[in-house]
Length: 359
Image: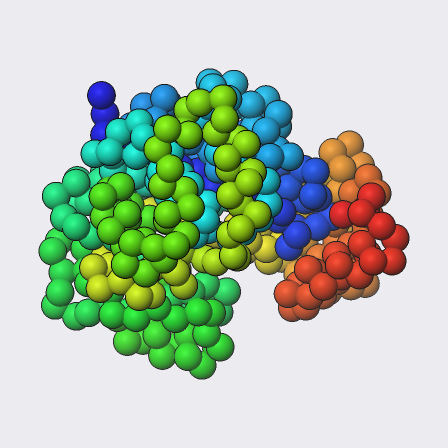
C-alpha cells in the first residue's frame, strides 16, 4: 500500500468569477480554457500519475456531490469528504486527516486547492515527490512557496530564514497576508520571500501533533475512530460541523507552529482567483491587448479589455478600455478591471436585490 495520499479542496463558491461562476456551478467545475477539462479535473489529472487514485480524496460542500462524481467517475462516493457548511480550511483538514488516519496512520498527505494553473507539470511532479519524501522523514509541516516574478499584491507571502535550507527546503520565518504594492516591491527585492501557494505536505502524525498543540478542541471533534468509512460517517460529520468555528489552517496552525518549512518551487504556478488573473494568462490578446476568453469578439477603438461570452455568441466592443465584460445566461457583468475586488460585494447586492436565482 502506498503511503502517499492527496486531498483536493474543492468547496469554494468562486464568487470572484461571477457571473460565470455561480453557487450551483462554481469555478472549480468550469473549463475556463476550452480544453475539455474543468479546473478540478485538471488538478485530478495532474496528481493521478503519481498518487494512486484510491488514495485521492475530494473535500467539498455536500451540494456538489453529484457534480464531483460526474466529473470524476474514477472516484468512489467514499472518497468524497462532504461538508454540510463552509467552515474554512482548518475543520476541512481536521476531517480529512482523521479520515485518512483511519485508513493509513502512516500516510503522507498533499493538500491542494482545485483551482490552480500549473504550466511545468514535470517539474511540479518532481517537487511534490521531493516534498513527500521530506515529510516522510521529518516531523515537519511543509508548504509550497513559489519564487515570485513580480511585486504581486494578490498573494500572501512566506519569508524564509536565510541559510536554513536543506536543498530547496527552507525554514519559515514569517507569513504575511496580501501586502500593498510598496511592501510587495520590498519583498521581491529582498529575495527572502516566496508566494504562498496554499499547498501543503505533511504526515498524518505531524499534523495531528500540531492540532493537539494549537487547536486540540477542533481535532478532538473529528478524532472519533469507528465513525469513518461506515454508514454513520456523514451523519457524524453533519452534526460535528455545526459546532465548528470558521477557521483557516494558516491562522490555526501554520502561523503558530515552530516546525514549518517551505519548498522554494518554480513550476509555472498561478492562482486562478480573479478575472484579472485569467486576463494576465491569456495568450490570445490582440494588438490592443484585448483578450477574448470565451465566445467571439470584434474590437473597435478599444484596448485592455477581457471578454467572456457564451460559446457561439459574438460581441462587438467599441470605445471602451480596461473593462471586464462577462455575459452569462442570467447575468451580465461590466466593470473596470482595476475594480474587480468589488465583485463579491456586487454579488451580495444582486442576491439582496433580486434573489439567489442570479448568483
